[in-house]
Image 1 (cartoon, one colour):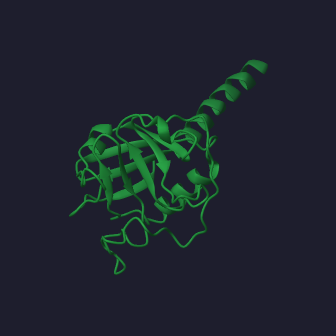
Image 2: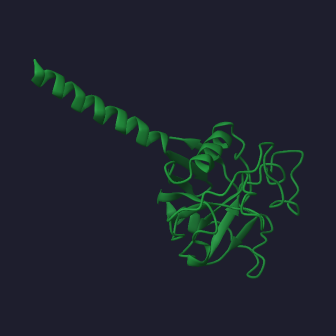
Length: 185
């Protein structure tokens, strides 16, 4: 009888761990393909919660990559001014807005800003992150412990590399690429 209990516990643990793991995977659809993002809820629980909440409410759908700097990062997530299908869309203001939710307190951690890392964009105030985020094209150690990293691309980084680049100095993008959709797996 004990043998059956151990077998049940073993399979139950495998099943629940797999379900929990799927909850921390997001699918970002871009014009060139799907990108899988693993979220680090244990390192930045509030940023992960906000990211998933906005994604599952479809707030990121049609939001442009307003600032993209070759060899550095691609920034998006301005749900107020950056949604190309919204009447509030204004490319010149994209990057200045957020969501209707309050700003988040910084959750700095030991996650290094390496290729594929997802991190919260913010103003000079470390506690000003809201909805915007960026994806690193390559390592940016000067951002470590300065920005709240909360995930990493685990599949499809080649599609991130294809995002239209902006001005070499400012990163501003004319006719930018956009998020088609962003959802929990």
